[in-house]
Image 1 (spheres, one colour):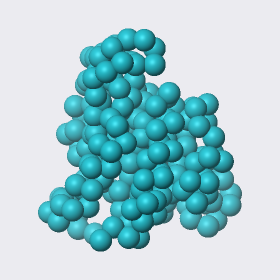
Image 2: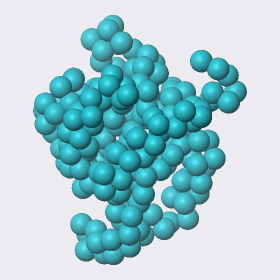
Image 3: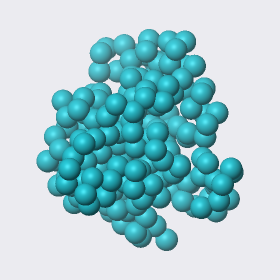
Amino acid sequence: MLTGKKILLIITGGIAAYKSLELIRKLKEQNFKVIPVMTKAAENFVTPMSVSALAQEKVHNKLFDLTDEAEMGHIELSRSADLIVVVPASADFIAKTATGQANDLASTLILATDTNILMAPAMNVRMWENPTTQKNIKLLHEIGIKFAGPNEGDMACGEFGFGRMAEVDEILKEIEIHFSNKKLKGRHQMRRKR
């Protein structure tokens, strides 16, 4: 039963960010609670108003928001979800995660959590194939972060190759697998039990 399961949805900057709106709609149809977080770059592609309207929740986008910190600090926000999903996961956000940066709300939430994380990468094929990106992906795999995609296909820039974000239904399938797998352990639960 997925009713009441909470997804912390991080939307980063990239043309594929528009697909996050469809993902929110489909998650809500399956009775997930969706708490949206947007990076500043994401706001160039989708508006906080659209995201908030679909999620029926406030969009969190500031690290040092006095109201948010008084109600639920970013540390608690990072740990209150049953799963963290990053859609799309830009090359920049993947690099920040791999190097432990925490200079905005989204990256701080990732660094402060012990909750499972699913990322759906989306970027230009050359960015995806870059050895630095591949090194970052390998490191994130090693620490237990899961990935949906990327797929091979046409890109907004006119190129073709891997880097196209997984389709919304593919991401949903990965989320369903996460919640249906009773043996799945959290990233840090191997070291300490909740």
